[in-house]
Amino acid sequence: MRDLLSVNDLSKSDVEKIFKLTDKLKNKQTSYLKGKNIVLIFQKASTRTRVSFTVAINQMGGNAIVLNWNELQLGRGETIEDTARVLEGYGDAIIARVFSQNDLVRIAKVSKEPVINALSDLEHPCQAIADLYTIKQKKKRLKGLKIVFLGDGANNTFHSLIMLCQIFGVRTIASCPKKYRPKIKGKYRIIEDPKKAVKDADVLYTDTFVSMGEEAEQAKRLRDLRKYQLNSDLVKLAKKDAIVLHPLPAHRNVEITDNVIDGKHSVVWNQAENRLHTEKAILKLLIK
Image (cartoon, rainbow, N blue to C red; front, top):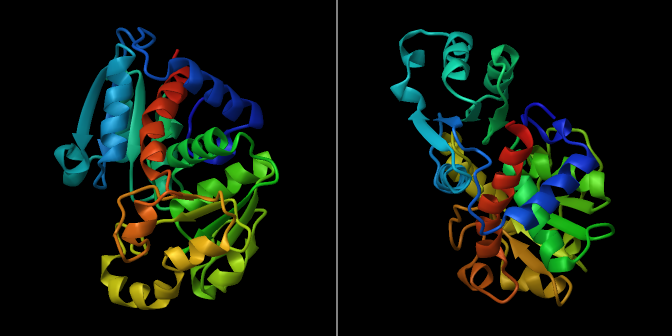
């Protein structure tokens, strides 16, 4: 594995290595990245990704250089390729959060150093890895579990999760309207009725109904997706020991209610913390 642009870049063995490394590196200071400079570029707003990667790099002895897209010469006409060539000459890896997956592909094509997808319009592989690690941590297994995603099935995190669950034999259900179905091929089922979808589920997952860049459609999306809110009525239909995940930020009482995100089934805060731990493992695997 040279880059992490998509879950498709990962084999089952790669993910298992990441999980083992996560267990090993959790809560530890190391010197694996001593003398390494890691460039982080953000075209979109970020809290967890920016902070978790910065802390991960620092805990591994490296130096994080965090740049906002509008601070670069890209806004004045420099090409992505020219920017990438310069940055890979200064740094030992590029981590980028972008609006277009194609921008990541263009960066990786010219960079000799590893490139990591910190979220694009199509995927969020780092989040999906932390999600699956959290599920395994709580359920002690993956194969045969039933995970139900409620809301916008074309969500970037869910795209990555579909592919990752397929590798490990997790049954994946998207509960969403027809026009919000996933935009990728994969092994998953569509069950439009949320009450039918969540029956006997092991894992319930939701995300924002309005992603970054979709603000102009907010009113329509909220109307279309309202019945997919993850609330206590739906949780009661899942297994008694079902867990609830949300990648955050959460719009409380929109896609998820207060009593669910703060309730006994929620593992949301552990899920968020695991971003740090799994990202350390990803960095260790990719940066030599």
